[in-house]
Length: 325
Image 1 (cartoon, rainbow, N blue to C red):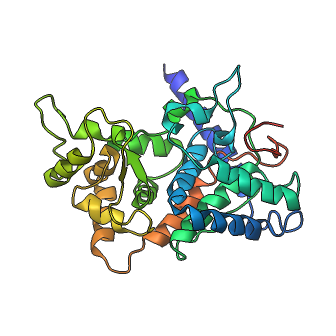
Image 2: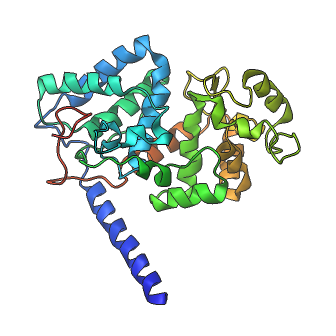
């Protein structure tokens, strides 16, 4: 048993070293000679999309997160299923993702100018940033580039790599640690819940018969729970509810004010109050004027965008994001 544990630890260390080396090969100037206008092309197309569909910002940001947490940031979430393989986008946690057509639109614009040069993984990372910027011009982070596209996409891997909304703080920290992300990254990246919506089915377990006695989750503000029950029946699978009511199109630190008041929509939001470090961050952002959230978010997004990247001669640059070459 001891030797097996040691071997497992050495394997994790080896994989961590590979990930770090790959991440270090990303560069802000990666396309400076091969596709110097890539960022301007991506931003121009993303701005057009956001002008008519600003609610896509949250799904596009979430898509980048879901891509990176499964097989690393390799664009595998974009691949279509085939008759012989169910791909990530058809895994249960990804069934609510949307915005694939937006990525295809941006990819087409880039391919028109510089065919076969820019990976879908890099485009997804840039679109996630630029869609967020469209909601708040101060929500900027640099996007190191040079990711290659993976050729493998498996639906069953989404279940073991993506944290569901009912996870507690111990489970959340374990998932993030497995991606070389810290508790601080967890609480900061959770701030993305300041935009977007969720189906009732992701949180109704907190509203009805939580402990088998007809009650709601005690970690949820009872007045907020009552309000949610007016929107969502126990079996509602279709209604959408704002994660940050009144602010779901504004990217800011208001999410932490809600969590501090026990009005986080998901169990995973309330869980941030169950850990000393994450709770301290929540309360600090909720109470302090001149929040550090945007700067913190930028740092964590750069870090997340380097998870498990493949670079150099690995993988490929897909011509169409939904299909391997």
